[in-house]
Image (cartoon, rainbow, N blue to C red; front, side, top):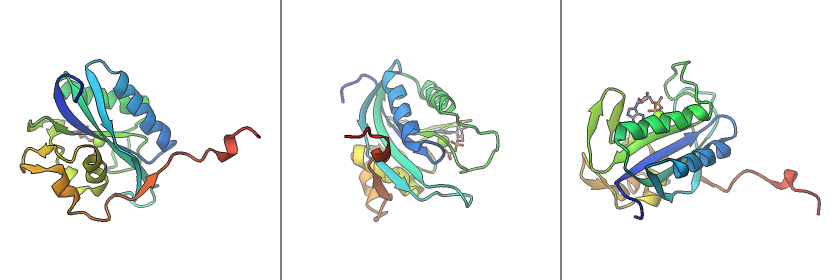
Length: 177
Ligand code: ADP
Ligand code: MG
């Protein structure tokens, strides 16, 4: 790892609007944030939505970063980036469609249970679309409340995430030869 501070993992997801653009913008925002060094970025995976019917497929990814920010300040940053990409929570629908979802999965080996901030993320071990990308970038990170390596969870959900996404189709926007 090249940056200073605590090693963290963040999950990214989008299933509304220009999904590739939302994830790319989130990575750029994390990369330029003070106190944050992005260490590794997974591939983008296209996955089936979980939650209410009628929503589109997700793009998911995971990053490992090092940070000198507190967990709470890092969560504030993640939520600000979500808002900047038009994230609207006003419908109150759990697992509903979203332009951008950024979840703090791991913050070093810390366990935090506070209003509005739980780390390790309480639902991460149930979610192949989180574990798959995370195992790509951080197979050796230890999940502190179980003491197990990330890789050990990823291997129990074979078939894993979905389809690797190679980016938006560009053919029609290319200038003529
Ligand atoms: P989810 O990501 O589980 O689908 P939301 O993105 O709507 O749900 O998040 C709901 C709330 O979860 C947020 O208001 C946030 O304060 C809280 N939360 C608690 N712990 C975390 C965490 N580790 N990462 C992201 N959000 C968290
Ligand atoms: Mg979230």
